[in-house]
Length: 310
Image (tube, rainbow, N blue to C red; front, side):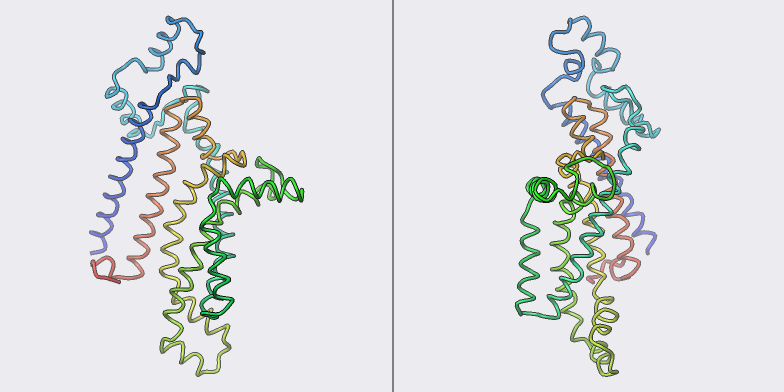
């Protein structure tokens, strides 16, 4: 039964990735602008433009270009950049570590902030602590990255001078972009932790643990939180993909040399192959993370793989 569940999820993930490939390819070719004109300039001679179009294969019909692109993907060949003439695989491998580093730092910040807030809100239900924690969560989820980033630069870099304005130059340069990217996740998780923890606080095993004379902290963390983490883990897995997509804005604001900033640079240059490959990388990561989340949930809770309601 689990094998059938696995095959179904893998086929669904493959269909989603294929749909993303098709959508991105055709939408990019509908965007106004000519990459040849961007590379040669508006004053270039028409013969030079035609020669470059033939050299890049841009003079062929759209369906032919799409077929060649799919054939390259089947051979794990992402193509060559129209702007730098470098293999796109090298460009992605250069930028991927920076994006992974930023995503991991943002996730750690979110967990360090969200777990204590969620526990505090559940234990101090309907008190000032609860309202304050949920107010912080609401405030954080309401702030977009494109506003949070400049505000953190203004305060942390310009006014206080504690952190660099932009770039990737060490741990200090990671703080502001990680705070910007992790704020949304750090605002969603406390509400989930509070909700799931409240469901288990009055269970029989919790009363038994208290009856044994265990300290409240041990009862809440070891027994309550551990049993309330399954939906939280699922949410974290789903939000990891959102961190990658949100990195496009954050990396642009902080000039962070990751895949997100590569996408923006390629769009400005009309470098279609790079945009396609970068978006494909981000979307595939999102789909793979969701797939592993589904499989982990099904492995932990057998009712999922049998189609029962958890």
